[in-house]
Each structure stands twice: as structure tokens, then as C-alpha cells.
Image (tube, rainbow, N blue to C red):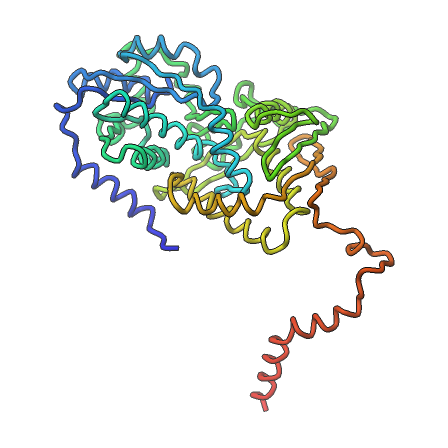
Length: 429
């Protein structure tokens, strides 16, 4: 695969933005990706100030950010938006974005892609609304240092290739979150954060990420035991002293039941978040390599997702043959990079997902796990498609395996080594 330097990609993005500068006089209506967080809270008045008092239509994609949606419409309208769409994308997010990655076991440097696969779900709906509203541009609040700008814009290109894109972080004079807070205060924009709790967070029902403040120094330990730091669970230290057992049922790699109760994928994730969070499951502290070239430190809470990845991995050990399992591991790395880099709507992603769907057709069965203070312990697995045969695997006497056959196998398998050694000996004479 041809790899382009992430520094070069960032350079191209900056240069393209200079060349394709927007004629602000032509911008009458803008659709804004709106979360109500710090960035997008100040963007509404900024757009009206800098784009000739244009109409701003706010769009919030509900991917399970729960309480963050409370009071959002009132806030958007008070800060200058003409209307707010709140689109329920939760089931689509679970079934069409999370499940394909879960089935593949896709990760990016151990990160379970919580923000990465949420962005194309939101951006797709954003583009659809912009087209329906006859908007002149789409605006997002992604920083020029981050990955999300790429994820949003690549998806917009897939559904509205000619749509103009406004990215305030590439235009305005604001240089930090501190200056954003000052702007908000000057414009009487209410915020749910302050200078002391100003972590950069992204939340959906799959995960919660924390970045910034003390976490910017990898030498600092995350404040897991500090009240209010964790939102989806507890530190393993504060988890119960007794284990919790769960069972998960899968059909063709898709989770279908928890503890014997049939549920949707979304419902299973939400229930596992409660169970896993209470047992200190799913905390990840990593320094990852961003697409735009720099390293970034993040702390992630993914209790339910971590359990699902573990359970399906256990099931795969008995349902996949060796070569398919190994190829799946390679595909998981590639898919993780593709999704992380915002390339969801590409032939490569679709091709990998097609392979995964075929490979996991027999990944049907039940997995039992024991959860204890941040640990997930395999407590049993069964499947009607299990390739594990105790008659062959036993150390006791059996009638199906002739151990003498192994001699011929080793002779053939080791023939290249033998021929090479014979050649070496001949050349030494």
C-alpha cells in the first residue's frame, strides 16, 4: 500500500484552504455541526460576525452523548442559530459503524475508534441536511491539529462533493481553549466547563475521551480516583471485591443477547457500559500517532466496547481456522487505520468489511466472562461451529490421531531448512 506522509497531508490541507478561499459575500446559509461544547458554542456568533450575518442552522447528531443534549436547542437559538436539528443516529451508529469494526476486531494502536467511527455517521447526516436546506456551506469546529477535520470533510466529500466547508480554526485569531473561554464570556455564552475542568472530551454511548490539561504531560498519572474524572465507570481500585459473571451471545459475529436476554446492539452496549463501568473495565491511557503527524495523549473510557471485543475474540478462537484468523488480524490493523483516518466511505473499507462478513459467518455462539477489578477473564465458550475437537486435542489415549504421521509432516515441512543446511555444509568444504 502506498503511504503518504501525514505531514505532507497536513501541508496539502493548509495550502488547499488558502487557494480555495471562500467568497464570504456568497455565503447566506450555513449548516453547522453543533455539539454545544466549547468550540461550537462560540462558532455561531463568530459565523454571524464574520460571514455577513448569515443564517446558521445547527445540526446535532445524537450518537448517545446523553445529558450533553439537554438544553441544546435553547442554547443554539439564544446564540444565534435559526433552528436546531437533533438527529437520532444511535441505532444506525451501532449497527452500521460499530458492528463492522467489532466483527473485524479493528483498533488503532489499541484505541477502540470511539470518535473515529462516530464522525462519518454524523457528517453523513450533516451533508444530507445541508443539501435539503439549500445551504451554501457546512461548518465544523474541528481544530487544525486534529483528526476530526479530516473525518468530517472526507465524509462530506462523499455525499456533497461541491459543498463549501468553513473551518474557523483555520481562519480566526483564537489560538487556545483559554481564548475560546474568554470569547464565550465576552459574548455571554453559557458553558458547562471552566478553566479548571477544561478537558477536551468527546462522548457517545461507545466511549468517552479525555485530552488536555494535566494529561498533556505523559509523566502525569490520570486522576482515576478523583471524584468526577471518570464518567462511565470507576477505577479498578474502587470496583467491587467480588467478580461479576456475564454471558454474551453472538450470531455471525454480531452481539444479539446479554445474559440470555435478546437485545439490540445499542441496548447491549448500554447495558455493558453499566456492568463494565461498575467493575472498572475499559480504561485506556495511550499516546497515539495522529493522522496529521503529531503524537497525542488521551485517556479513554470504553467499558461495554472493551467487553464486546474481548468476548468476540474468545469466540473467534474456536470458530475461525488458523489462516482466516491470521488474515483477520492483518485486516483489523488496516481497517483500524482506514477508519481512524476518516476513510469510511471508500472502496477499501467496503472491501475489508465484505471479507470480514464472510469470515465471521460461523462466529455464532455463547461466551462467558468473569469481570473483576478491571480484568476480563474467559470463563467458557461454546459454538455449534466450533473447530475445537477434544478427540484430536486430548493428551489422553485417542483413536483419531496417529502420532507417527508427524514424522513425515516434519520431514516435508523442514525440507527447505535441510536443503539450505546441506548447501552451507557443501560450500564450507
